[in-house]
Length: 140
Image (tube, rainbow, N blue to C red; front, top):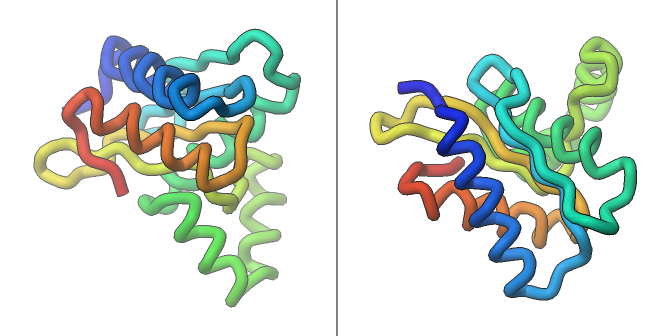
């Protein structure tokens, strides 16, 4: 199974609804396919210009390594040189900071990732999870 455009857009819609419900600042949300290609992006009115790059970089790292950006952030603490090297070799597309989760199909295969930027890392991650679960997919 691959991630469809319709699913990506539904993830964004559900994530933004959760963000509004919780009263967060304007968000940017990026959904990537399993190859790290942008599938869909939305930036709420009032979101800063950095939202896209941050949301995409969180999701890109997650899908590239197959784990949430929270896990990557934890791993980076124990091996900072490696993670700095990853960021450099990816031309800045790799950000190991909380706020992105991988998207998995029913068989547990990674089919993409979603990253958010605009709140705290925990807030960003929470709305990403809400978006993924709203479309009946799993996250990790």
